[in-house]
Length: 197
Image (cartoon, rainbow, N blue to C red; front, side):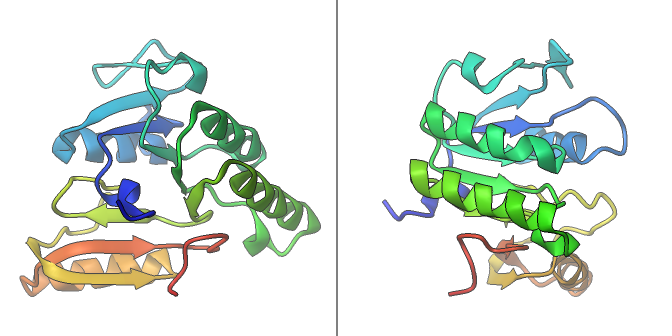
């Protein structure tokens, strides 16, 4: 199995930051998975027992299995510890949606990003992000593209990658408008691990 396969064909996903609150990234991502993903979905948020009809776990430790994929959509300061907890759980593929790292141009943001790199290497975790919109797989139903107004193209055989989430969103809209089918799209943001090479 390819090292990156869990990003595209996981059997289970943990969504850290899932919430019932309208307009929040964690809700949009959870809704995407509920609509199209056939695997097991584990919302994680200490503030809720249930989110959008699914049992919500207060911590990663409470999840009854090792999720194939972790999706993190929480404030930047909480991300390093969350990544560590996913590593301790055995998860090997993580998409970090959260911003607030090197892209801020601050020493604090840079230090947080360096910590993510250290933790990912310590646990052998492959990471897409941070500061990204992540992965859209039109066949498996993995979809962290949280922009609700974005049009989604039909299934097809065109794939693309982009550093910029804004560009990826615009291209998806354009392809949907022209009826061009998409298989996969990746927006990798700050690319601390997975990049265009």
